[in-house]
Image (tube, rainbow, N blue to C red; front, side):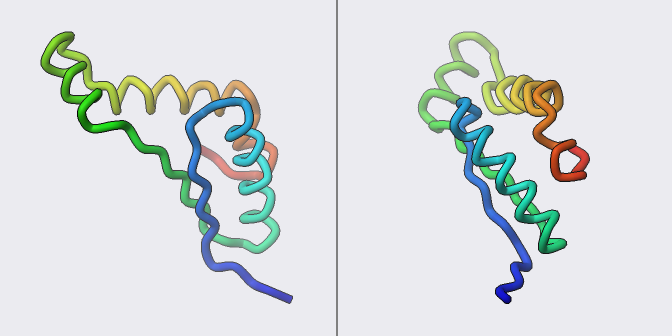
Length: 82
């Protein structure tokens, strides 16, 4: 049987990617693997938001999405705490 040491799950926090994240959580839990959740922010957009609005886009998006994951039970479904 294939044993995974790490599971990488890139997400954009759409409903589809949150569904994929649920599967990744379950897969990581089943294999007692490390789960790495990856998201990316377009650098030009992030810099424009910082310069024009004084907004740290990466921090704002991450906090909002982490809350959405917790509310949706994604982390709890695999016994993983965020």
